[in-house]
Length: 339
Image 1 (spheres, rainbow, N blue to C red):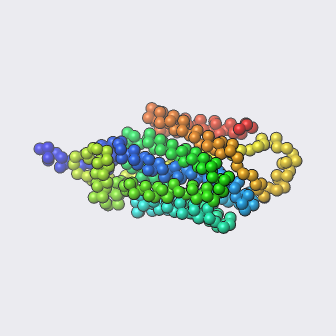
Image 2 (tube, rainbow, N blue to C red):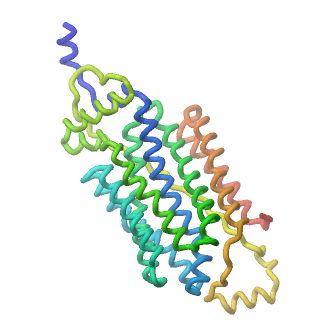
């Protein structure tokens, strides 16, 4: 009778993941996908440090400075849906590897650019690439049991803060001594390292099921079960078409302003307006790097708070409370405050 009951039982990917729970495999996956998220944060933080260096290198105008950021985000906007289609058609892992490899290569291309316009092209392509890196979130979430999903998705954001902080330290150590080209080259390495580490990341079982590859999906679940030291549910494995998309993308870039609105000296204000098209050359100092590092590490207490309250008051109220707090804090920037 027990054999007959087992034969009549069925289980889906979701049920298998919930049964296997949160174990060694999820910890390994947290570190690997978190590393990709860290590398993505580093590429975004480059925008905060790059313009002052290029002002001195190529005497670029303020408009050209703005184009650097515009090119990166423009590339992200144009390619976001493309990466989604690639990952839906060829797999989360394949799309993630391609995005990371492209980001690393285009980052190195930026470092060896002979002039501003070639540099701008490579930064646009970096934007195209890094818009695919958040697929790490999708891959990660599809291996998480329901009981741990909310907390883990929040906690992996710690890697963003770590990546942003590491980029600030890297800029402090390399920028003024070796120059921005070496700095960009080193900043591109984490994405390439992730490509190598991705060998240990399996394809999403949920993607394999929706692609009609139930056999491979079952083998993937067996692999997870082996690492976690648990057994799959009894019964027959069936396909259950579900899809999880996670969008959580935020960063804070600190900008220093020496003057408070109309308090700028009149003679300096007139000079600034007259030469508004030409950017002044000023290298970032240690205080600038420390400010950016401190601001980004300040995300960590917020993440800890989110983990503590998200299961108690729910996702909706957690978002509402934190957005309200954010709105209040950001409104204080209107007032003239010292560093």
